[in-house]
Length: 365
Image 1 (tube, rainbow, N blue to C red):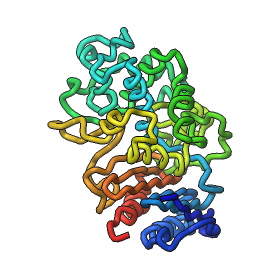
Image 2 (image 1 turned 180 degrees about the vertical axis):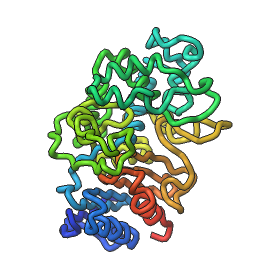
Image 3 (image 1 turned 90 degrees about the vertical axis):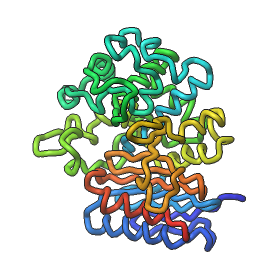
C-alpha cells in the first residue's frame, strides 16, 4: 500500500497536502492540540511531530520550527545511530560484539577494563560512567572530542563489567572510537556515508554537518540540568546552543535530525528489507540483550516497559533525549512516533512527552 501523508504546518496553520480520512485519527489531533497549547502558552518554543500508522503519515511542525524539515538537536536518540554504525562493521566482519574493546583500543586494558566488550559498550553494562566527572570543566574550556576519549579510556569504572546495567554515554563514545580506528574515517563522516545516506536521511548529521546553527531551534537550556548548561551562571560558551557543542559531534548525544529522518531509521527496523544491516543483525538490536540483569536493553535501543506510551506493546523499542525528544516504534501495530522539542526532558517529560506517547500508543486509533 502506498503511504499517504497528512502534513500540517508550523503554529497549526498548515495545509493538507495529501490525506485520507483514515489517516486523520483522533489521537494525532489530540497530541497536536496538546503540543500547540504548550507553544501558545510560552512553555514550549518549538516542536516537530511525526507519526506513522500503517500506510499513513501525520507530520506537523510547531512554533519556531519552520517546517518538518527543521533539524533539532536530538540528544541521546543519537545512541541508536551510533549503534547502527557499529553493527554495520559487525556485519562486515570487522568486529564482533564479543570482542574486547582493547583489541581496538590497546591502551584500554588496565584492571577490569580488559574484560569490557563491544557489547558492554552498546548495552550500558560496561561500568563506565554516563558523563565524565570532569565533564563541565572540559566543556567550559571547549575541549576537543579527542580529550573526552582520552579521559574516558582512563576514568574509574563504577562496577564490574557485565554485572549490572547503568546508563552510560561514555560507552558510546568509546564505541565510536573503535569504529574510527577500524575505518580510519571520522565517525561523523562514516555515519553520513554508510548509514544516513543509504537510509535516505538527508536532513541528519552527527554534529551540525552542513547545517547552519540558525537552522536548528535553540534549546530552552534555562530548564536543563547544570550538567548541560542550566543554572544561574553564564554557560553560553558551552551549553546546548553554543557553536562549540553543536559542532562537537558527540556520538552519545550530538546529532541533529528531523522527525521524518528518525522515522525512516525506525521504519528500517520494522521492515528489515529497508535497513543497511542484515535482517538478523537488525532483529538482534531490538530484543533484550541484558537478560538476568536489572534493566532490559537492546543494542543501542531502550526496551523499558511503559516508556513509550501506556498502550505500547512489550516489543516496542526506541530512545529519548535530554533536550526534550523521544522516538519509538511498535512492531505489533507497525507504528512509529517521533516527537522533537526544545524543552528539556526534565521539564517536558510529564507535561508533553509522556502524554503525547500515551495518546499515540492507543490501540483504538
